[in-house]
Length: 118
Length: 104
Image (cartoon, rainbow over all chains, first blue to last red; front, side, top):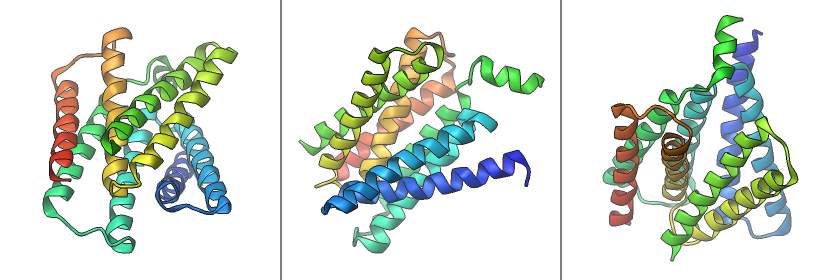
């Protein structure tokens, strides 16, 4: 597997852990549940940072945030009985578009230039 | 109160992310402890805010504050580009967050 497709798999995995810790922050009550939540936070950040060593950081964060938001909104509605409201979904998509736009237009600084040369 | 905690969570996330960037150029105990404090406070506040707010909404706004706040700081202090489409993105995030607050 190429280095970059491995990094994309890492991002998908990090996003799953992201959704897991968000669920944990809201619903954990027992100590072991909090333990898993903290572990998921550490794993998602670690994987995210290691993926952004191979791929441009702006792109990595944009995809990561997109997957995380979609996952949490879906989990809310599918498993936790949050009602589906069109206006709310539209606003979240608008917010997401803003975040992704920002991440993609943020330059990664000298690090990225080095990568383009090499 | 839940919205105030959510805003606090977004702001302390900015501290954490800022310290993470600083750590790449110079390492000091002060930076490391601010990083741990920033992320720690951020997750505690997010968790408290989510007691009453829906998970998806809270997460989206938390991310939005982190991203737009980071971009504003970058523009103000680190000479990042202030092109129109970046400012438009920030306005979109803020507008959506206010809209979500109004319909909550």
